[in-house]
Length: 453
Image (cartoon, rainbow, N blue to C red; front, side, top):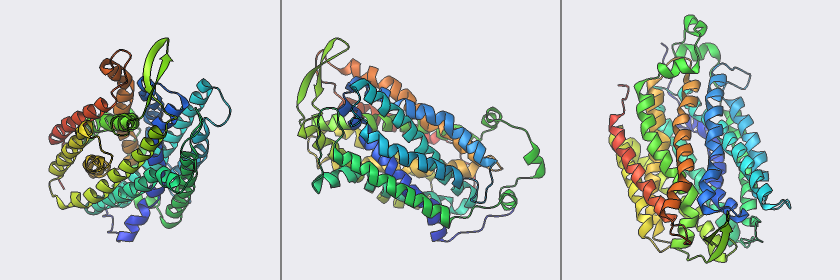
């Protein structure tokens, strides 16, 4: 099998640069969705259910995107057309989603509109995101994959930093940060608009700068013979033949993504109640009197902006830790250590009542995020050969989607069990559960079966 040649740093950079724009979109989604639906009037116990559709769509769409792109070749490449189409859809939805409360719709209608917008946004972001991981698998040799995914992790976290800070910065320069009941503040709306513009510009840059290997050259680099091309297979057969790394890394992924789904869902409520002392109002939900946070209050909206700041701190922690990760020769050791640090960060949130003390908690969480972005894909793509790289990476997306689906389905029930009758939901308890899940994931790291290099 012909060896893929080494690439310069800037060639590796160009392969992943569009990831910067994609991650801005993803950061805006993850930091603001609970805020958007809470502003529209969602009950905290139901917040996790609004996160169900995106991973459900992802688990269906991603394997097909991978499989189709494995068999695609156009003048623009095999993966690039999919990332471009995904980005274009994401841009359109990013301009619609934050306006869910501004079209004069009833509360229920606005939530349904927001829900389907979220589903299309998450699916399109994933459609744009996965090809970048596939291109590293396609175009980078085993020796440089660790560096390539570290560059991708850096760009990912840099994009997150920008996306998380947008609402805070816009509010700081004087753009309206509060709005009428059921209407999303302008600081959030403008953040989505600017994020959409940056996303499409970054993807255009990668499209222009990166030339994927044509079919014949790709086959030589990946050991694909004429017999292999004629071999009839399907996703089920590929799953049966999947390397052990696929399943063992997938188990670790379950605990990691379960934890982060709770973070995205419950950080807003946790910080608003625990740190900013947001006022509460009495609300009747399904005929039951409940105490909920007042989403029209200045404290709640300031807390929501601060969530963007601490998520940005998490991104800074990820960038710094991404530099440390390649220094460890033992991937399992640094993977497990990263997850333990993240778990400690999550659990510490329960004890923090100062907005600046949260920086340490989220720096630690950033360590786990950096490892989750780089190490699973390095381990998996090193274990894969042949012409089904995209399909396997699409199927591997299931190890990201399934835990999110489980966490979203169980989140409301778990929170209800911990909520006193007529009292405020203790959303911060969900952060403790997230920390415990990460520590369990760290223990599971040591059963990973890596391919010897």
